[in-house]
Amino acid sequence: VSIDTPSNWNIKFNISPGYRSPNLAELSSNGLHEGTFRYEIGNPQMKAEQNINPEIDINYESKLIDIYTAVYYNQFRNYIYLSPTGKQLYGFDIFRFFQDNASLYGTEITMHIKPSSKFAVESSFSSVTGKLKSGKYLPFIPANKLVTDILLHFGPYLHWRTGADIVFSQNHPGDFETATTDYWLLHTSFVWVTHHFKRNIQLTLSADNLLNKTYYDHLSRFKYFGIYNMGRNIHASISIPFIKPITKI
Image 1 (cartoon, rainbow, N blue to C red):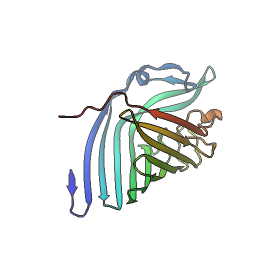
Image 2: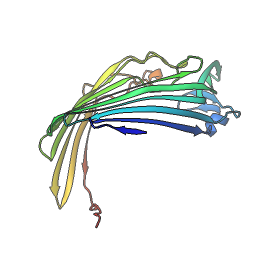
Image 3: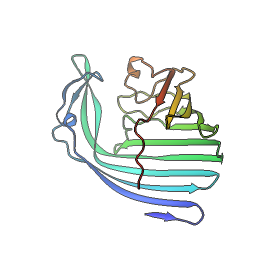
Image 4: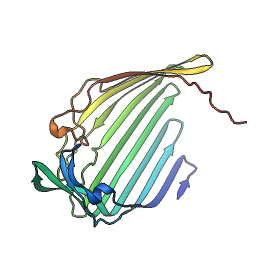
């Protein structure tokens, strides 16, 4: 359902069901998972996972600012998840696949401020929480995140983007996870477009984690071995279209 109003507002409401059969690993695993150093045991009695997801979007658009918001509540029946048993085999922790009712809920907010055609600010915030029916928190749930970018257009052929990723602490880990502290990272990129041989050639120079911060992403499996995420990363690329775009007659 979508409702348009004469005052630049748009409201959308949606309900969608979902269905997923358990995969082969969840049904029949019985061995060491070398990528995670876990001994995983499946459950051949698994039932199909079902869910229903109501969602509401409230959007506002104008010449100066655009705001997009979404709120959702995803209710699962027979949610499949991995959990430790507290036992070991050959020195490796034993994990089993279980099922329980669960819920995933959160919000996404994006704001785009555009005072002129040469300058803009973009900011987005995302948050998600996952819980079992028992009240325990689900594993593999990312931390809340805020990304803000400044965009400058120096004419039609040179563009600069710079900003920061602000990741909040994740203090609600799953059974076998540890909490993760907050961190923030700087990034930037330049895009230059030049015209040669009747084609637009794009040159890009970008850098992530400019300050070379040491941090752990909450979803990283390497943090339990004391291995940090990637440090400063600088890369350049060139894009040359050899095939002309097809034009409709």
